[in-house]
Length: 485
Image (spheres, rainbow, N blue to C red):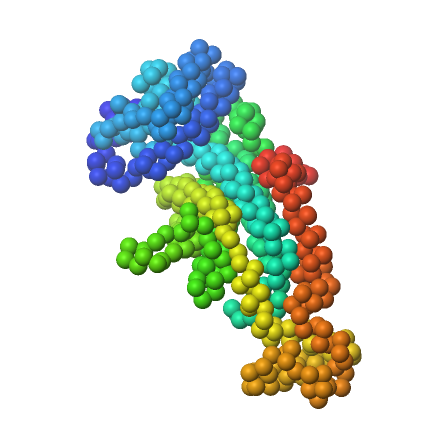
């Protein structure tokens, strides 16, 4: 459309055009845009809205552009774009259409029949999200396998468990690692749930009111592998809740990655010395020759802030917008694309880093010599003898305070000394004062008991291994829910 024949007589101000252009960002949606256009033109031809010959030329031109994008890795520049054109290529949709026009001529103008850039961009983002969710789920799966691999190597390695960053109770290191596997499982499930809502086509909603053409929206959805359509045409183009939901899931995933990064930073320090991160994931210092810095773990921890910011940014953009589409919504693309890339890259490098990390059972054993972590076992002992737990807690608290004052451990006290605090202590109480006895004494399901941890490892291996059912289930769309199209 030339500026002489449209609503405007003057060209758009070059500065305003540059300011309003989303093309530098949404060029990354080129293949999704082409895919949606191919489905749209096929439907237009089938419904006899376009002549078959024109539809065939348009489809051939789009496929040619798609091949060029695949080869070059980016969208070729259009010769028709320019500041003097009101419909210059200021976004990916116009850029593709401009390229198509340069390839096949005026027939390209028929492609936009029965659609708007409003429903077009909503579709592009959903196709992008569907692919990225599947890719991120695959990366989560690899990280979970790295955790389970380390857990399998440390089935009987006992470490201090912490609360408030203070030693609390002995736990199996495998149990600690599997806690992360469970966290990331929920991340994968959140993404799968988000995918259920992403997997709908908004195309055919037009600008907001639908179209006068007798289109088949469901045919387009089916041809794109989507499970249905966004029913309400205003909702289809005016909301960005699936994008916000995705950004929320990304932020939670990065929070879990950040916690892992923090622990690796602590564990690899000289003060803790629990872990040695592989050299491929550490850096040196420009001035201090001895340094071995956990930079990758720190960067993962730091990048969580990007995903938090992206979530807040889009929530803020959307919070005051009246229905339907507003140009403010153009600001959704950068946070969306950035978070998808950040999360996928962080998961990938975290899995590789974790696999390279060597943990030090000997160092853990040294920490376990400090037996104050076994105090809870003594309180449980008295409770099993019929002492109310609060009283048992107070009795053992007195013992712990006395030991701290004398500079001795719980194992250094004699049975006679224990009986001075409670006559219910017998010699079997002293046998509890070993880390392995402590973890074996746990009876509850999901505890750090070795049998429970072995069972958990076997379950995770079954769930995550190879082409296991859950691995498959994450990367395909969910079955239809009852009552939904």
